[in-house]
Length: 209
Image (cartoon, rainbow, N blue to C red; front, side, top):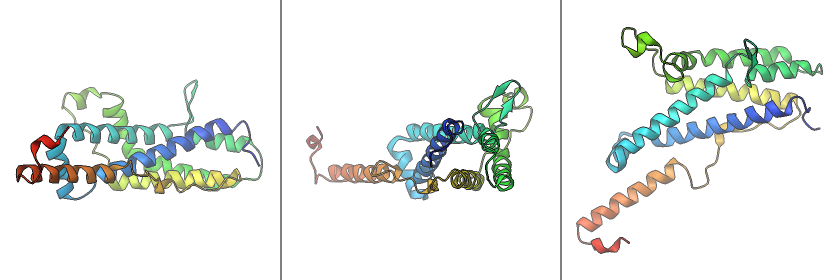
């Protein structure tokens, strides 16, 4: 049974963003939530570059979770959020577990509150007192908070999928097929070992193209 035409556009959009934010979080964990040894490897290889990548991925994840948990409407403007998707499901007037969906949507929104506070004060906007360091900034989002928000998001999305007769998605098991952070770290370790062998004279310096 196809997804109703009035729901399909916002469902497809939020589904794609849910896939992407899980993929970015998996990449972030592979690169930056690992061992001290790996942290030092990244710093030795290209410290500033990886700092910029860490900041960019972290910012993108926080912005995505924040905007998905925004209200369905801000003033006269409608927002493509999980709340808007819930409203579209309710307008179908068919048999759907609305109370459960409302609970799951509320859980997601609540789980994003610490992330949204930082988005509102520091990432998307520059609160004057915080920017001038006359007030304390909101704390950084923790790994646990992001994990909790993502869990709540996929619980909501999979409940909506079932309501729409769609199969659930294992968002948390995004497969990178040789293009993820683990693969990059492996290449960096090989390159560092290559440098050691060159220093020892095992491989000539002229070997590089």
